[in-house]
Image (cartoon, rainbow, N blue to C red):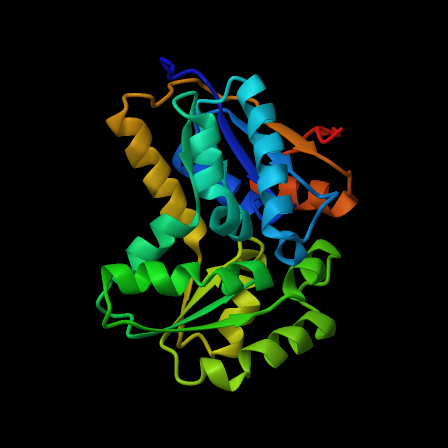
Length: 270
C-alpha cells in the first residue's frame, strides 16, 4: 500500500500520558497533522492483562487506520511491551508502526555515560522485562534495575501533581533500595514526564532522568525522512479523541499544545 506525505500521524495511549509524545512530535514536526486517541475508559493499562491490552490496541489502531493515518505510534510503554508485535502484524503495510520502547532502549544502551540504569514503569511494563532485555541485547555491560510504580499513573490522571500527595508517593518509590546509586533513570511510562521535574528534584538534579518522548519524536522524523513521507502542511489542525472525557485530559492537552482544543468522546470498543 502506498503511503502519502499528507496523511496524518496517529498516536495512542491509555490516557493523557501519550500527550508528552504527541507534544514532542508536534514541536519537532510542526507541519504534520496529529490524530490522538486516549483510551481513558480503560486506564491504567498497567493493571490489565496482555490479551486485554492487545485487544484495545488493535481496536484503536483500526480506528486510526480509518482516519487515514500513515503512522501508528504506540505512545504507551505498557501497550508497546504487550502489543507492538501484534499491532505491527495486524497493520502490515497499511501504515508505519512505531513504539516508544525501542528508540529509548537504543538511546540508553549506546550512551557511554549511563552505567547503572534505573527503570520505573507500570506493573505490566516492568513485568515484561522488556527494557532490561533490550538494553542488555545491545550492550550487556549495562547494569539495569527496574521497579514498578503503579500508583503514579492514576495519581497523574487524577491531577495530583506538584503537591504533598504526589511528592510523598514519588519519594516512596524512588527511595526503594533497588534504585540505590543509579546514575540514570528511564521514565518507562509516557505519563511520567508530566512529573519529571519532581523526580529530578528528588535526585537533587544530579541523576539523568530520561524522558523518551523526544527520542521517539526524533526516531519518527528519521523514519519519515527515509521514506520521503515528511509533510509540508502549514498550521495543521490536530484531532483529539478519548474513550471517556475528563477535564484533566483537556487541561493537559491544551497545556502541551498551547492552544484551545476540541476533544471528541468516542466509544470504539462496541
